[in-house]
Image (tube, rainbow, N blue to C red; front, side, top):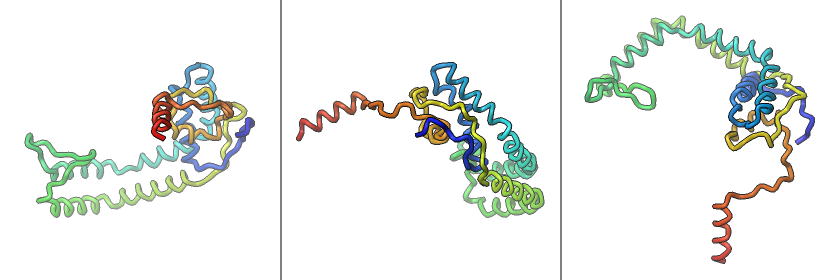
Length: 195
């Protein structure tokens, strides 16, 4: 990887937000304050590009049909299957609809949706608009000349973080021999003995 990082990159707006958020979340990946400062500095330099994107997402969220969402939640609870204590049963963070009352629930849910159709349609149109906006690729200015060095990261770094920040990380460990953990070496020796 080149030591001179590009100052611009073609990336979706959602990807740019991912980079910004990753720079904010990697504090635990660095042991030295100077390395955390570099990440914070990079993030601060991106803030001006990120704020309008986040603002779009926030504006869409304001159009969420809360009255419908609350009414639907109450409806789902009222048709949920109850446990032995009389509480609505849930599975994977969703209420379990009583199978004996499913048809009645679906009819009531459809009527509720129809009652709030205008607000729901408005919200869904706004969500589609924002999603299209986020997927659109732009030429973004990355915070150069600062960059992160691969050697700065400790064992807490996740692979997805490295993938997100790939273009901002200088590979300064090329040529360093990576040693296998002791358990892998033992397994390798066992395999050699068997042959």
